[in-house]
Amino acid sequence: MAKEKGRKLIAQNKKARHDYHILDTYECGLVLMGTEVKSLRQGRASLVDGFVQLDGHEAWLHNVHVPEYSQGTWTNHSARRKRKLLLHREEIDKLESKSQETGHTIVPLSLYFKDGRAKVEIALAKGKKEYDKRQTLREKQDRREADRAMSAARRRQRG
Image (cartoon, rainbow, N blue to C red; front, side, top):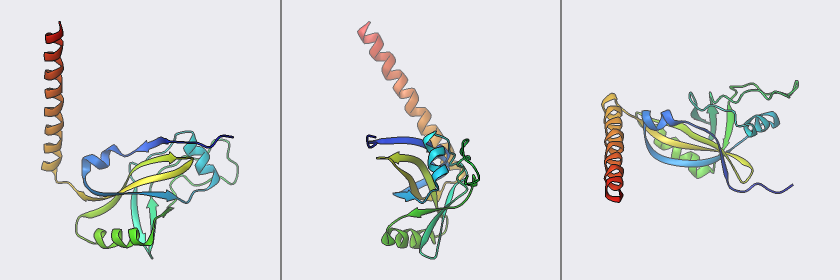
């Protein structure tokens, strides 16, 4: 069987980018059971309520929903179990010191396969205030309107 190449996205946490200022991102591996890998290969997972907790120089991913594998037997996994993240000690120490600051948290941004191995992208983030969220939406809307106006001008110019 040929070895997988490239990156295959499984799940993305779009709400995290809306609710938090992303300060720093890390790519890390996951310790998974066999049925979890099979379920992820079917493209089923949810990062919506997920968060990372650091304890005892280990990083743990909590509340990420990986549904049970449909053909699994008694060896099936529980859907919301905590999963260990594979990071270097220096990265864990850096995350631990920065996440102690007020308002900082660690959230998962995306879950994907990279060259056949399950990876999760986590981010050190700081919570946004309500007015920050409105400002972000306003900027996005303005950008979209400007793009529309430019494409309309291009169409008029050609035609």
